[in-house]
Figure 1 (cartoon, helix red, strand yellow):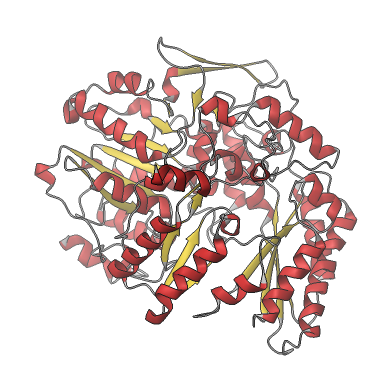
Figure 2: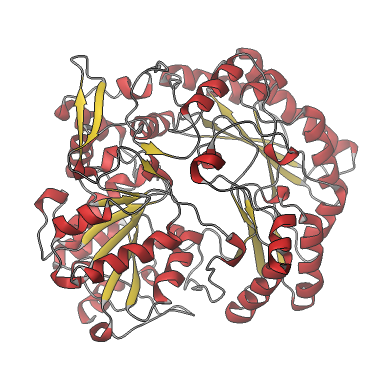
Length: 620
């Protein structure tokens, strides 16, 4: 700790590294049987905004025989100081070196953090590659959305958790202790762990390739190892563990508010959306549970805002009733409620007025595409009329600024779709003027990301649009979105290209990741740090053409790098959805009672947990 104190005055935001937050958990190291370091491969402000961190912190630290402490990727200034002084990566709770822990658990939220994972391993003094680690090193595990294509990181991670971690984490800790704890045999543990549902051990699988570089086989190399790893899903979600005494960050973070998870999963079926597949089925919490959790969160944190978190919060069965009940209880304390994931067809004047009773936050709507034809292709399920009704409700309720989120480069996109984006933005601006919003306050911000094909989606077979063409489309939109009250934001095409390469990658990308890290790649998701030339050099050194990953159109019968990872949704259904997309046909939301036949419920032997059934079970 003395050495750390000598460093802190030399870096930006020293509070990132000191710990000591409100509700922090500190346990007796010597009296705890298994010790876990939870690693978020980005800066403190990003990691502390992540609900999954808070949930697993609560889950593990609720055990008497285990502790979980946190570590984050040190910013470049801190890394420099640590390397100059020989300081090892440490946790915030005890400032112990990460290498002293039994398990190092990474969360994989974004492909552009992969080089940070390698950098954190190196700073911790842990060999990068799993095959180089021995009895004296922590087990390195990982989970999260990017684990649904784990192959680019297969050389570096001992095991992956596929799906939700609340239950499987306990099973891994129990197995660790059963096999001897600190004295366990790593190989025996990994072989036994591979038999746990939802656990993927890459060293126990062999990947073979055709002469043209495509994959010919992905097979287990040991008995008792499943050919396909099926994701884990938490059942009885209303009673799932949830942190009502969450850690309160010691400095401003990206989402500095209390988080209340109202439901998990989404029924909409947008064809580009990986989260909509990997978090199926929808499971809702009861209003009684949510109100109790909200009361406790406010009492234990002092937050003045509660955010209702899910993939599509406005789809919660009783969203208006829930918002009204929360505000009736909390507004006297000056606590506001925010809905960060509104859909343009699920908004109403009543809901708009409810959420701004205490404090008005910004509103973001996501039409995704500029024309109805393309919205049908992606199965967005909303219309221009829906959008205009939503923004009218917002302007009527007093909002003056609206954000619109779109994607460019979606499959089948045409020039008229780009013009449609600008047309929608100008219609929203005109509606604001019609409704009397003062011109000096009226603003419509358009944000356009580039489509990245992701595993386990109907668009997993689609190529990404090439970089130069994406640049041209961005230039087109910049020209169309000029004028007072309009703001246009876009993403770097080079970063989107690299994201596509890593999202569709196989094990051979491990060489690229290591080369990129050795060349100095860090914080690739941050524009001030991202260096595409270094990545190009890394691909050159590894002898790999990245375009083969980003721009390849897969055939339905191709073996994909992630085909041994089972998200529960059948390949047959994804093929059907892709064909329907190319025909511009919509697929119904399964909340309507019409089952689209994705195959998840019979595969996982589970059904959606909607409020009517949740409350029936609770009363029974």
